[in-house]
Amino acid sequence: MIKAIVVDDEILTREGISANVPWEKLGYELAAACADGREAQAYVKEHEVDVVLTDICMPYMDGLQLSEFLYREYPQIKIIIFSGYDEFEYAKQALKYQVTEYLLKPVTAFELSDVLLQVGEKISEQKKKDERIGKMSTTYHRNHLLVRSNALMSLVMGDKTREENDRELEDVGITLW
Image (cartoon, rainbow, N blue to C red; front, top):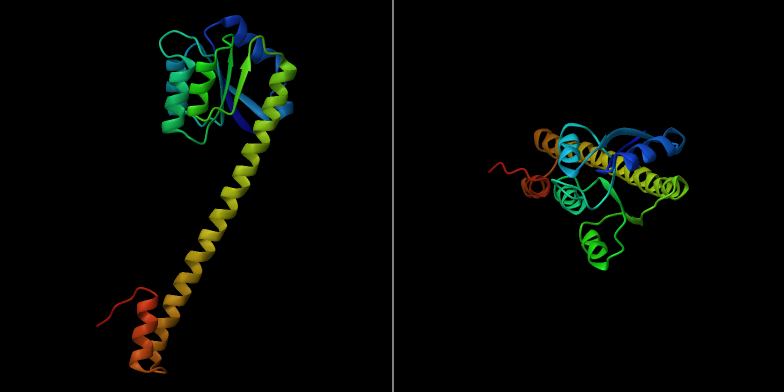
């Protein structure tokens, strides 16, 4: 399941999003609902989070400050901003922090569900890609160890000239002489 948190200082908005979005049906778990960016920041530091849905204007730490923190410290977290402010400067700053989506309030559960599905697909694709890279890295490491072992075995068996052994060992990063 994809873990998401909602961040908004307006309790009705937080509760509305929490209650009206079919989280589980979309493949999500609503892990937390935070009243401001500072609370969300503390939560993210202690828990695994995949998606942060945040308002912009909040006390203590606003949504853009939270987005900057996430961009710098947790770049894998997808950020969705929903705001009542239709100002270009906010959107421009959000782009700087690679915010995935910028929605204007009021946001319907249908709109948010559609965005969450799209974001969920991106997260699934990234996880598959990371898994493939991990497998390739493991295979590479195993093959590298095998090549090094074969080079050392040739040296021990004495079936190559010294020059051939030196070249082969150098190719795999082993220096004996």
